Length: 217
Image (cartoon, rainbow, N blue to C red; front, side, top):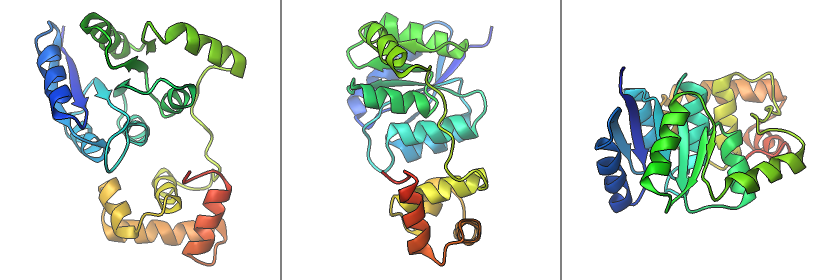
């Protein structure tokens, strides 16, 4: 059987290198890349198309939840397992809604991390042992399993949705182009289309409408 191809993403080099060494020594798992932040994770995932990305959450430039949303939305078949210190319900829910297939806390044992990667690669959804019961109760109270949130502007294309999300977060066109790995012209065209579809007179009104719809928070 082909090995499970893994990318490791963490802004702390010691943690990142440790995970690379740990996972690379496991039978049937091949580490094909590593990244130090969310933007780099998108780039590496796009180049290597791994089976699983092991993703931290709190990172510079682009956090792990936004990177997960991009990776799972753009690269078919790539699964993401969060490995983080964050254990609050809101962060877990945000990660699952972004498309994460697993959620582990740092400090999890090597066997638990290995099981999560293998399960995610096989199509499963995994929570760390210390989280599973609490997460089950949380989603039971919410009355539904985690799912992708419907976008408030359904007429927008996927590219335009990415752009308006970053517009609402206060990014400039150049910053948006950098984060999405597209040209400035592509961003300008998307922004113009967004104005037309939202019936916005300009950038300020488009941002106001996006934030009123819950984007950019």
